[in-house]
Length: 121
Image (cartoon, rainbow, N blue to C red):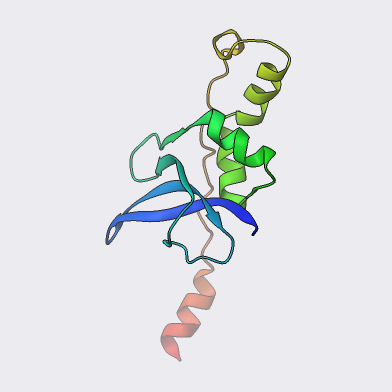
């Protein structure tokens, strides 16, 4: 059985929230999970993200693979740096690592010429 750490969708239509779960790789997205490891709410500003650090590091130690999205969220939360600091004997409070702010995305450029061609066609 291969275990993945991934998002499970919660909430209603157009108001999505996610749980971070450890789940068998072959289960459905919202299927029965092994353990709930945290939450992620992208609807608020700034985005809310909370995890159980000890449990996530346990599952990663057991060979669980994080999905690409979870890996990016963990990097943004400096999870890997916190774990390395704890392994070196530093307390979580001594590390004093803050979350990396979300990067601002550039708006997509729209080719106005292509739009006009579509309208005329």
